[in-house]
Length: 415
Length: 81
Image 1 (cartoon, one colour):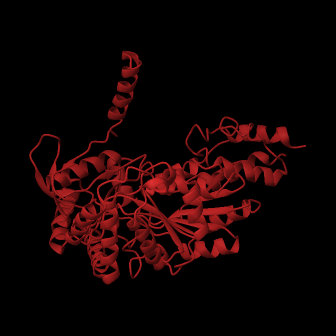
Image 2: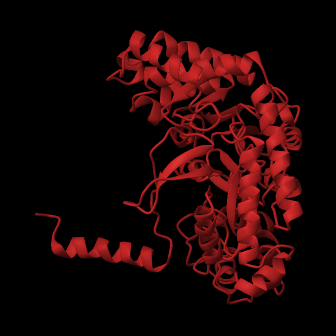
């Protein structure tokens, strides 16, 4: 047997090292549908506890919407459960094509191709459209899935300081001799909740003839006046060459993603992107659900409007309570604690108070920038936010951090 | 070439150090010390090539060769005519 005691011990030692470092990830079992209130079993084996969920990507509250569930049921009945094939053999249904068309219209692009996830979209898009003669210039805080996709591509890779347009311009000048230059950014940055300066980036890309790729996973459906995304908010609809995004967050929250943008680039993905070529696409049941989500979002902006109001209420409440927050105007509101252990202890104390929010620390965020990342949803009512504010305030007092500056918190708990 | 050390030190400091970071010295480990990631070596390599009109073969642009200002200076000197 190849899996000898020696090999087993090697992995056991690695796992123990992760545990000893205090960064061992534990799943918490949720026994209810995704919603503002969820029933959680934590630790494993304990009785269920009803808590307010403050850490889901369920921005629009559509993950368990009755119309989406009904549409998914109908999709299951009319198109079956699985395709048992990749797209280009016999894995494409009419509804896959319909969803691609609908997303193209929704995002204001030229064409769209579905992927099993946005992770897959990001893994496949670079190698499909770039070669070793090209350069990719990415913001230093882009999502891990973009970094993985960049690593899979033979093009040269360089970075620019987070949201630093002067630095980006210097990199565009440095790489002026390359055949193609592609600038890469998140639309809304997942850990900080800040928005990319897409208007300035578009101007720079036009000046230096560079392509622009935006991962809008934390934006699609709710950023911008009609929820089209960061490009709508920044007034550059139709000017982004490639948008990648997910259906696993605001757009129903199940799974799936896409590459949407210039017709030729999307077609190159259809010919060359390996996660598209060598993996089944989204199951019919999910396609039917996402189509219904787009129906809902095309009828009214009520949900993204409520989300905006909720996020402003939450940010104001935390600020008045005396927490140190990351600046921003999105539903991602990071409560800065700086110290990794404090973030874990704070999260646990919140749970005891009936609030579910997770602490993030290095390497998910930079060293010394541990935080509780809160995420607001249109599914939250004001009573949820008030109760959660009460819990945050109580726990904040317990750890004596209310009204304290960053330096004072670091002085008390270290980095 | 007298100022090569300082040119590299200044570039690395401005390019890679976060605000409030401790200053680096000529011998501070850059890559093994986590200050410069292997991705970011690209811009440093291109900067050096453009500034000193040299071409550093990829085989020579190893993480070890870029691991401190002094090592980078030694590398550049090999290719400057």
